[in-house]
Image 1 (cartoon, rainbow, N blue to C red):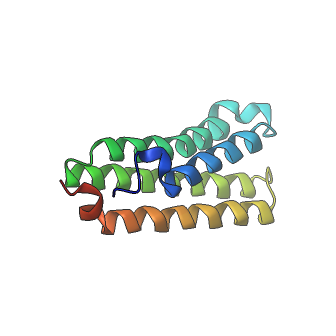
Image 2 (cartoon, rainbow, N blue to C red):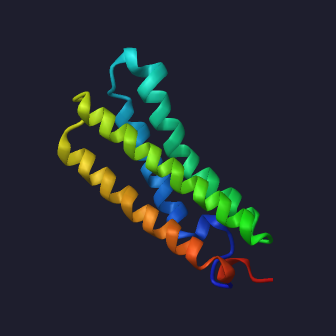
Length: 125
């Protein structure tokens, strides 16, 4: 992919960073008693998405490793979706905000799966 110089240029990476920042800001308003449970969990999983994408980029030489790390990123975004739904169930966020975040994570998932399906284009020597 000659038009992309590094993982920071990937739209999926940019979206993952934006979403993890949204999650961070949102969780600042969560109750103090959630700091070591829900708050930590959703922050960790949301931040891990971008980290997995960066690691996948570094492993492009090996297509199976590239796909594996992108699959891990997709798993982390799905975990984040679970925590968003948990926050909504706990009435820490409203349905509109939860739906907006879930829609963005669904888009991110589509982007990851597109990269997985096109792995040979990213990994060609």
